[in-house]
Length: 140
Image (cartoon, rainbow, N blue to C red; front, top):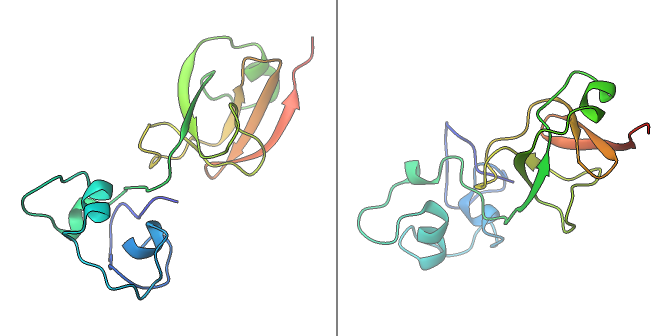
């Protein structure tokens, strides 16, 4: 899960999208500082000044690229669209499955819009709130 794009942020704490420790998989009360290598890597600041603002929208998770169609309002339209758009998911497979988070950017911080997408393998996925809710077979 990515850190929030705005609002309060902390090094520790229990709120997943507000705690840098939690995002990095550390204990909520781990002794941490902004200058640590893993913090700098997450923030994208290799050296020099670093601030809490550098962490907005950042994600420690790695994502897998996949090709799909643009978003459509229904599965029928998605199944007929073979235009190639690259998106990203946080699952372990080549293509996203139900429950995977899907994103429009490689940093995995911008969830895909709600709708249906052709996965270009005879199936289409339904997305709601940035999560794959179902994968369907496209009619032949």
